[in-house]
Image 1 (cartoon, helix red, strand yellow):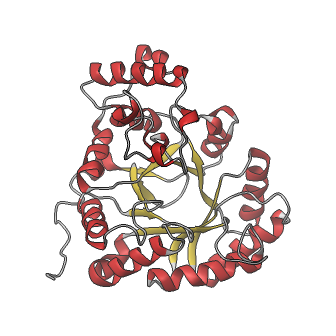
Image 2 (image 1 turned 90 degrees about the vertical axis):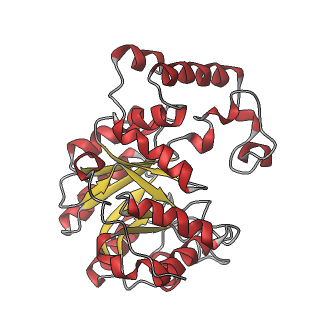
Length: 328
């Protein structure tokens, strides 16, 4: 295989592609690449290589993973490690690589949630799979209501101080726990760089609960995951449930989600997108990026063509008041 050489034009649109992450020295692309479901062992390696090359060639420097991404668990990181070895090792210092731990990963009492033992062991495993000495950012993947927050957060502090991660983050923590984490980490000189939450036109809890405002007011970057609600906010479900769709398989997206009210809303989104000469995904992503305090949004991709279509949102014009009112 011919050695990969990144496009020399990958930073030509840096003036519109990147945003500062909270009050930090880090710039992140407005659109980042997530490895949740399209890069595991079930996906052809060559397709994953094509998507990742496409992302990097177009200025996407931020790659978001977790220990249990696949399927099966761990294989998203293994795919990343293979591509790091074959293609991206020369560009490591141009990349901002994240991983997480918090969901079930292995059997027994130490392979889940937020204990110090789990977080530390998980990161060591992740680094081996990803062929890395360190990650740029490490998250607690979810709030643990039983483990003391001090234990989870001190583990993150020690991970950063060990050099195995450069920055600290949390994902899907409620507001009061977020406030505690911000204070705890700040007092130990390991500031909270990123909060990751589900934010899209259908799921607006981080905005409604005050999480987005807290992050904005306290210099914490906010990253939206599932920005297209697993494909709901695209043309895919306007005329029913396709036989090859994620909803038809009934795993992470069930048929009960597609209510008459939601279908009506999707057709409204389609009208707004058509009036802007955009597809539904582009308009949905543009809405997220228009929310004050949002740093980046994570997109998955099953092809480089899909990724390029989603990237067009960085060139979208701001939504006007009338459009926002229709999409409220």
